[in-house]
Each structure stands twice: as structure tokens, then as C-alpha cells.
Image (cartoon, rainbow, N blue to C red; front, side):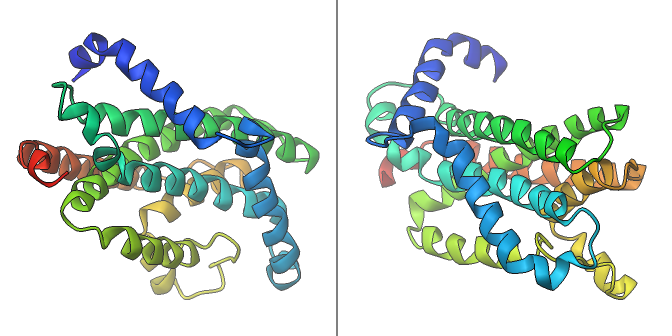
Amino acid sequence: MVQKLIRYRFLFEELVKRDFKQKYKRTVLGMWWSLLSPLLQLLVMALVFTRLFGRTTPHYTIYLFCGNLVFSFYSDATKGGMNTIMGNASIFTKVNVPKYLFLLSKNVQALINFLLILLVFFLFVAFDGLPFTWKFACLLYPVFCLILFNIGVGMVLSALYVFFRDVQYLYDVFTLLLMYMSAIFYNIDGYPATVQNLFLINPVYLFIRYFRKIVIEATIPSVWFHLLMLADAAVVLALGCWMYKKYNTKFLYYV
């Protein structure tokens, strides 16, 4: 896979550039929407939920920002990756190129947006008076796992979307449900231990929880927590790779 990326490096770079141009085509602010969109979402959520949950949750703005930051990255990468096979059929039906290049280019675009917002997030952390410690370096781990997880989910979705167009509408409903189940704007500490453990089934919540523990609580999650995140990413990525390998030739008959 690495050798193919090197071999098709020029194509990959052009795909990333193309994705950026398409996303911000005919917009006045262009790439600034990468920063403004999540910040406006944060503002709306803060106005709506601060009175409900902010009184009992320390550093609620940062708490909310952690959830919005991680979930936006997940949603942007996976929704964008869903149409990568169908949207690039005119290319790979004429030229023999690895189909995962199109998915990876979407994920690179989502990653760049995420990193830009992450810089703004750190500014909010500084303004809120939270100390920057060496533990912030541990945030590289959930980001790495989330990248692998996003690629895996994108592979699964893009493969399914070739055969079943209904996936697009079902996934919109699923992401809405997932947002409410990821404790983005509310705190689960008041729930019984059994209910709190059920949230750990949700991989997106794990990534959000990791950010909050490092930034707000200044504690490093347990080894078990790290292994669970890595297992989620590895399983989904393996499933996505298997689907791409199994249905690689069949894609040509359905696009």
C-alpha cells in the first residue's frame, strides 16, 4: 500500500487539491469556512445547552468544544468518504489506479480541517485558564486512532454505497443518533456505572472522552482505555480493507 502511494503520489496530491477546490468552490470566505463552521456550531450549542448543563460541568465551553471537535472530524471524514468510489468512477474505469486513493484524499482534507480547528481549540483552552502540560502530547494517540477509524468507516460506507444508495440516507439518521449518544453537550457522571460503561461501546465517545481527560482533567486514561480505542480502529479498518479487496472488481459493474 505504501509503495502504491509513492507510485501514485502525483495523482494523490492532485486529488487532495481537487477536493479542497470543490468543497469551497464559489464561496466568498473559502477555506475560512473550515474554521467558522465548527465555531458557529459551538456558539449555537453553547447558547442552547449552557444553562442546562453548564452550571454543573466545569469548563463547559471546553467540554463542549472537545465533543464538537472530535465528532465534526469523524462526520466530515466519513460522510465525505462515502461517495469516493461513485464520485470518481470516471477515473478508475479508464485508468487502473487503487480506489482507496480517492478515500484517502478525502481523509487528508478532513484531517487538515481538523488540525486548523485544533489550533483554535488550544486558544480556547488558554483563554479558559487550563494549564498546558506534557500530557497534551498524548493527544496524538487518539488522533492517530481516529484517523484509522475514519478510514475504515469510510471504506465500509463507500463500498456499501456502490451497491445500496439507501446507505446515504440511513447514515444521516445514524450520525444524528450517534451525536446524541456521544455525550457531546451533556455529562454522564450522574448516570449509574452500568450506564456509563455502555457509552464505552461507542468508539466516537472514547475519542471525545480521551480529549476531555487530557485537557480538562489533566489525567491520562488507563492502558485498557488505550487498547479499546486501538481495537475499535483496527477492527473497522480491517473490515474496510477486506470489503475493498473482496469487491474490488465488482465495483466496476455497479458504478
